[in-house]
Image (cartoon, rainbow, N blue to C red):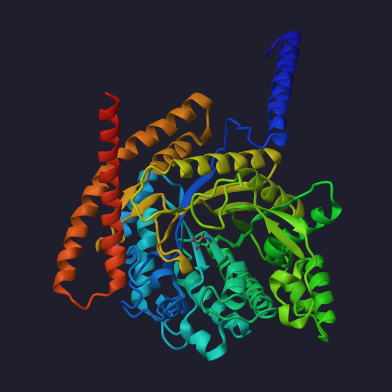
Length: 585
Ligand code: NOJ
């Protein structure tokens, strides 16, 4: 035991240390750019993610049925350059390769999704179960577990069986609830002995809004003002039913958890002293994340959604609101159906109040919100048009979840950034920057008391990016889609993320700076390797095209013209540089 006076000196010292740490930390609250050096709680889980349609390929192999994405992507004009996920990364054939990439990163978990029509080709369980599909996921799960990687499994990452869309109208129809529940139950039965983390739906906002309101995504329906609300209503009920199925039939034996993965941008008021802007920003988040989270945590839609959609519907002469209602029984059945909350987050918007006309012809989910979205032109936007890097928005969103929903257990299920490039680029410094800053904001949120247990970088590989085809690359690993073998190459961000994982955070400025420098150094040699390989496959493609006169012009453009132009421009810039240097001398 310490003598009394020494003990009190210790206490004072501890207090001073704690206070100064708290002061250090408080400083980050008023300074967006402040970087906080520190580590994550022990046991924090690091991962990366993928989804079935985006990576598996093998769209019509081994008895798989069609999904709405197979059909949608084969329709001309729906996807950039009419690309499809037919073969994508060929992940279906590359379990071992991909698990070794996961091991290389030393990830604790890997998030993937199960393709419903690969297991149940028509979507209706009583029709047929495809055992070959089951085998594929069995192998993937076993291989992950053999390598001590925890699988986190999503049941629905947008690939509804086409038959269900054609027969019933997909998520517009309440019958989806039972069909989805049967599919989920089959997954619990066959895989549940090994899976402890289940996610019912991935980003249902996108399914509802882009699938049934704007039609940019499969099934491509434009049911403005109604379609998204109806789809969301059925999805929320389906989620709740699956949670109850697990809770009553499987939890006792399997001891796993069931959650949902919701996406949400953060909305910041343009003018923080203007009450109207503050309310508009809150509305933005409530119509996005709150639309799904509020029923699941509190039993009903956010009050502001009920008010706004209800008022607009009345002004449009409708007898009832376009936003459906839950019965009292449904409310209590849905409330509390979440063992953990998955959060997918990529970006932020500034929001200001804007009154939209209330006539029936312009009714839509978007006009119902009465707001305008703005971006700061200084925000970096290296890839997707919609994705601006605004790290501080992440901390605010996580804190919003904490206060609104009673500090639930959170797993970040998606976070990452893309690049828009047809030329090869493995030195992704902007991605390193994005990960560094977003992960740091998550660390600050944990310090704020938000209960985040894990982080999933999006995504492990470059892959099919929905209506954008292959033009937006989110991967830590670059995939050479022009090569039939779909080889994977590490980008510089792999090296950086690996070090964050190994240190469980950010130890100090010198080290973190070193990681960045080293990561960028290693990528130039991988770049050369890839460039050589690409030249070889371009030559092989030219030979193939000469022998195959029917090959389309489109293929010619993406497989030959783009890489040739890239190689030529690199050569020309090198010659130009040499010329300049000579003139200088
Ligand atoms: C969220 C979707 O869930 C995912 O599939 C997609 O790749 C990312 N957004 C990036 O757009």
